[in-house]
Picture 1 (tube, rainbow, N blue to C red):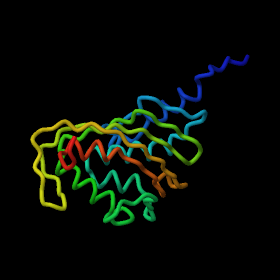
Picture 2 (picture 1 turned 60 degrees about the horizontal axis):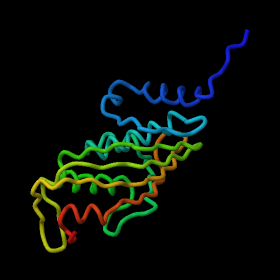
Picture 3 (picture 1 turned 30 degrees about the horizontal axis):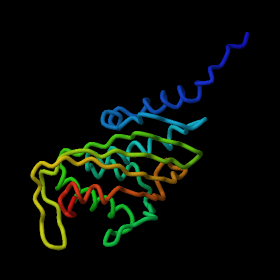
Picture 4 (picture 1 turned 135 degrees about the horizontal axis):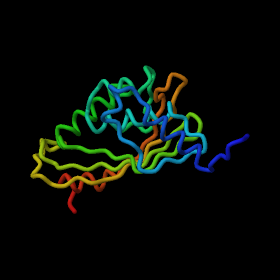
Length: 180
């Protein structure tokens, strides 16, 4: 006797695999609000969730779990070092400015060894942000902006390449670096 297969079976399987992460890592890994991909690879999705958790927490151990040793930022901002050092530096600066940073994965699309994410960053600017004119101190301003990322995940389940685009205009306006 053959059991009928639900058309939602691939998505249900992918979500169950996403939830079955190691206990030490699962507690703080963001779950995508929307997941797409006919046969979403849980390993690819796990790498993306770990990287989102790194941005939220600032925990370098999560970056090391998510990123390959030969990680390349394909849209490297000026002044940021290539490789693991780049995200570690950027996260440290951002968390100094927005200590209560939250990162939500609004959309995740897994296609083979690639994953695309729409991320939503929120928090409050209560810390210090460096500018060319000196340090800018926050007054509790709300921070709320979007980012889009595309990752290539290697056979070891770690991100080897990243292409990203953040709404930096909105962020810089909210920080007070640029006028509204």
